Length: 168
Ligand SMILES: [Cu+2]
Image (cartoon, rainbow, N blue to C red; front, side):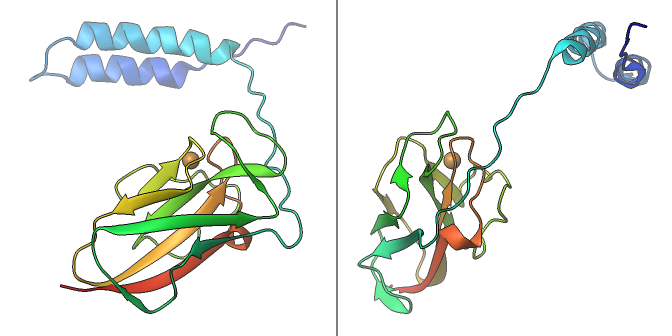
């Protein structure tokens, strides 16, 4: 018996877009693109390495920045890591990863969850050890989050948070 996988749902979405698009043009191309995607998705085999273990006693920390400290903006932020090595993003290697800086975006990202990439979730996938950020005056929460080569968080064990107060 041959296994045959087919996803009619995607095709139907394509057709729905076609019939529902009274005010839009190019619905024909959209439908064609959906059909192509369906074919590729059926052929793709996903092989993703599991999230590497966090070694005991490994940690990240802000160098020279204390919780509750009053600082000036722009602020130079230096990242520290112990017990794991710093590596560029791209491939998953046991015992390594790269830093992420969360600005007013919580205390840590759950282990295994991919870190978002936006103005409050900064990635340092070139193995950077520091950055400079601009903050508005007042209270801010900065979190350092270590993640693997696929940007999957190592969780609270590999996170550090400080609250700072930015001078006017
Ligand atoms: Cu990343």
